[in-house]
Structures are given as C-alpha cells and as structure tokens.
Image (cartoon, rainbow, N blue to C red; front, side):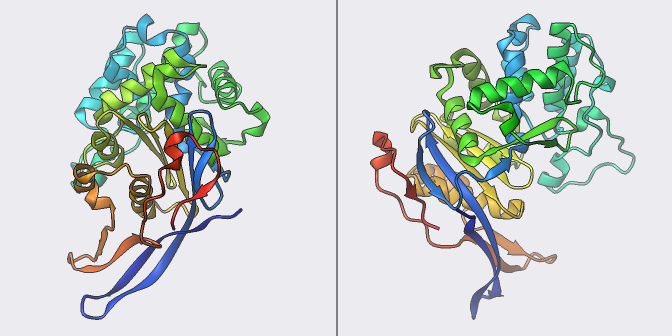
Length: 356
C-alpha cells in the first residue's frame, strides 16, 4: 500500500471560495495493546524514522536499571528524559538538576547547541547577545538520561552517541526486544541530536504508544512503561512547552493520552481508556499538515467531546495568514471527518479505514 492524500492547503478570497493549492500525503495506523491493526489510512506499515517519538523508549535501559531511584530523579525529571523541551527556565533547571545528581556538567552533553524552541513557538525574539549551550538543545533531557545510564553502569561518557557505545547497543537491544523485531530489521540513521535513531513500521510505533498508555498493565514491561507513561502524562509541560502541540494534546487528554511528536511530521499518541495507539506520518515531512491530521483522527475515533474540541480547535482547520495577518487560506483534512462505528472498542481485529 501507499500513502494517500491526508491534508490540503487552500488559498482564495472570502467572496469567491478557496481552491486547493497543495496536498500532503501520509499514512496512519491505529492499533490495540496487542498490536492488532484496527484502523488505518495509507500504508500502516510504512517504514518510519521515529525521530523524537522514540525518546521514551530510548530511556528504557535506564528505567530498567532502576536509574530514577538510584539517582533520586523526580517525576518531572523523568519526563525530561522523554522530552523535546522548549528550553524554558523550568526545562533548563531540570536538566541541570539531573546533571548535578549524576556528577556531570552541561559540557558532557553531546547533543550540540541550539536556540531554545520557545522563541519560535511563542513568537518572541531572543536577546541579541544570547549565547546557547547544550542545555538549550531540545534533546538535552534525553541526553542527560543517556549520561545517567553511563554513570550507572560505569562506562565512558565520551562518545555515548556512537552506535558502538554500550549505551546505544543497550538501547537498540531493548527496542528490538520491545517491538519484537530483529535488530537488523530496524534501519538506523543519525538524528538531529547526533544519537542513533531507528525506522519502524508505523504500526509498530503505534503499538509502542498503546503499550506506553497501558503503563503498568503492560505484560512485558509494566513497571518501566508505568514510570515513563505516568511521568509524561503528569508533566506534559516538561515533555513539551508553551504553545506546543504535545502539551495541548496531553492536557486535553487529562492524563488519558500520552503524546510525542517527532521531527519531519511524525506523531504518536496512546489512549489509555480506549486501549489504542495512534501513529501518523506526513510523507513530505511538513509539520503544518500533521496537526489537522491528528485532530481529524482523534475526532473520527470518537475521542473529542465538546470540551476537547474547544481546547484543540486551533488544530482543526488552521488559517493561513500572510505577513500582514490577512487570512489567505487554510489547512484542512482532505475530506470531512466522519466517526467510525464502535466496533474497535470491542477489540475487533479486522482492518478498517479512516475517512480521508
């Protein structure tokens, strides 16, 4: 199967109607906690580089080694291990606290330096004399967890992002075991923060998030999944940041939804009450198309009540504005969403198609 048109952008005048200008193709997979495909659009097994959606599972070796207890990490600090944070003060203080607890400094982080994301998402400008360190990189929380694993196992911290390093070998083995794939069946590549990243079938990513939402009830990794999922849902402000989608999804979910975005238009969401995981990939990597697609899927699955619709309205059909603030068009799913029947709630395993 192939990707299908999921989201279109339009342009026009209010008195003459909008015309489709661009179409973004993609794929969606919805699975249950046993990995059975329930709903799909496009190719549910599309090989997808998971990017930052992988972060909770890159923390698994540290969690399985009882790392949070060994270093007295708070729940907020565990959430930072899974974060693409915005570099707000609360995030910087949290990463510093983790580094202090493991006896290392920001210079040990091998994620590189980057401008904090909160400037982009809040529409503010950084000070003209601002200087960024590794702390400001959105992946510094994940990397502090990497360093903590190294300290815990008394292995060198230098070069911990290299594929041959014991840490990355442990992550690869834990991920392969968790998804039930041979390690050689997971293509690898270098992520934006220099750590290895893996491509998985989209349905496998959805399955991971169904299990993450299932938390301590996961039959294989209950305790670890519980620690990670509960930290993320309790502290979505640490996982994401002001004006960010993951904060909005998880806040709207009220503790029931665990969400993580990945670069180049990847989104994964686990829904505890429904026992499902959702994974979406926009084929051209354009994140502006991702958020209306996520909203449409949540809507079709019957997960949006009136309160959630109001909280997430900004993502339903976002306006496109020009430099003067004039509305020139919008971003919308390629067809009107319609709710599927309720069969999936009973655990039916037959493949059904989402309406796009």
